[in-house]
Amino acid sequence: MWKLAQPWWEFVLRALLVYGFLLVTLRLTGKRQVGQLAPFDLVLLLVLSNAVQNSMNAGDNTVGGGFVLVLTLLAVNGFVGWLTWRNKRLETFFEGSPQILVHNGVVDERKLAAERMTRHELMAAVRQAGLTDLADVRVAILETNGRINVIAKTGPAPSAP
Image (cartoon, rainbow, N blue to C red; front, side, top):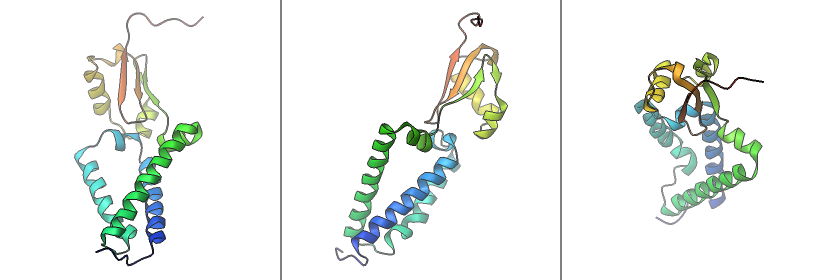
């Protein structure tokens, strides 16, 4: 139960490798995957966790091995959080940057496609903001957490000088 089948440092190394791999691959899948989980996205995350389990524990099912992995994952997650707080470049790399999907009622189709977002998903966010027509949207922003913030036009748009 307590005797590790592998040296403790191997658990740490395996956890760091798997954490880094998952962080990069999930980041590459886009903001939508993290912020707006559809049922198939949730299933994917559950299957991913099961798929990487053995790569982290090397077949060791001891309590001690689990403790080492948990502590390593919590520590590296805290460290990545601290790094992104201290360094804006790393924040942009790990979290991305907000994307303007709609500006003055006009949808940026390229950004919508790049984020793999459908018009139906965009319109759901518009309706959630209490609007029914894209023409009433001043700006819709896909935030780094996957949420879409919609700001309505309140009157005529200011003209540029």
